[in-house]
Length: 324
Image 1 (tube, one colour):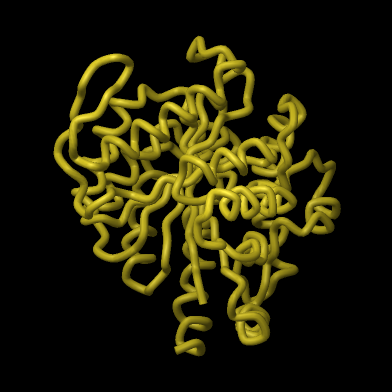
Image 2 (spheres, one colour; image 1 turned 90 degrees about the vertical axis):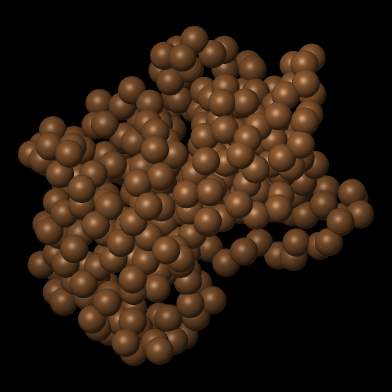
């Protein structure tokens, strides 16, 4: 059974909390996740968002790495076109050493036009910039000299483990899938329909069959003793996340996503992305399908830390002991 905890640090004004308190809560929750046996912390990246969406996931992962011991630390996804590839490689190998080899990266091309305008990056350069970022990271992680933009360079220190952190590609197009097969360590699709494009390219290249699409999650799970009472408490924050992503999706071309614009809580519940369950309901689901991961997002959309903690405590006290 796999559990993950995700943070993107959205902090909309209506939440009424200073960002410093939300970051403190995220670090405490990372320590908790490490202690109780959660497998992975996942951070995401966006820029210039009015709600303070996390712009610097590697910095936050460094703080989390210093306060944890065994949990995997993932950026899903790091928007490659906004990063200098060589500088990114240096930041990642330092983080890799701080964490003793627990870092994983999923690189993506980005899709929000305002972010590209903010960095002065033409959207037409996305593919080339992603490709350069991946090939630079893989070369840098060897610890040896390599050619970069016509000159010989070397990134130090060497990674904690030979080969360095895994570098995967995200995406929702057949082209992204085939590119991941050619240059990355794996593929994290936002659209399940393109997995077979990835698999076919891997096989064409004569490498090991990656098999069928990895099992998707159950959606975002929130735990409550009384889900009907909990829905009104969580709904403003879940609506904010759904519609914030949904608005970005209206600006994106060729991007497939589970996020859409919704009008109200009833539509949100019907969409199925967010699920509020009792501990008994989650245990029953896990027993029926233990291969399906459980994803939690305790500060989702500006959720107050105390609400997030209530859900996490139920996992610790009423779910995990019944699975051991």
